[in-house]
Structure formats: structure tokens, C-alpha cells
Amino acid sequence: MPGYSANAAPPPAAKIAYRAEEAATLLSISRTAVFGLIRSGELPAIRIGGRRRIPHTSIEDYVTRQLGAETRA
Figure (cartoon, rainbow, N blue to C red):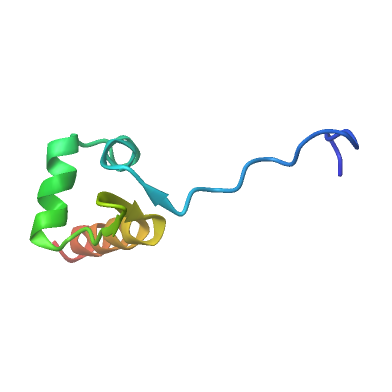
């Protein structure tokens, strides 16, 4: 592989689920806004061990829906 030595560790795998704070950073909104979107059902989340996690696909789907709403407006 170009740029990697034979002894180098492979790059980390992409996250498949994010904490609310991480999702907020990705979406450039507040943590409170993320929880509001979760409560309203606009941003589906899952519970893992009592903690909420937002799947990467939920974030992508939310952004896609927002882009669609922008083009219809």
C-alpha cells in the first residue's frame, strides 16, 4: 500500500455510531438540538448499554432529507 510501511497499523475504521456531542459537531449544531431531533424522530438513535448513539446512516439520511427540503422550498 503506498504511504504505509509493512509494520504500520492500518487506519482506524470509520465510526458507525456517534455520541450526541459527536453528532452535534458533525452537523454543526448544539448537543441540545441533537437531542431535540432525536425526540422528534427526525434523527433516529439507538440505545447501547443505556447510552444513546446516533448511527452514521441516521446522520446521512437526515442531511439528505434536509437537502431535499431545501430544493423543494
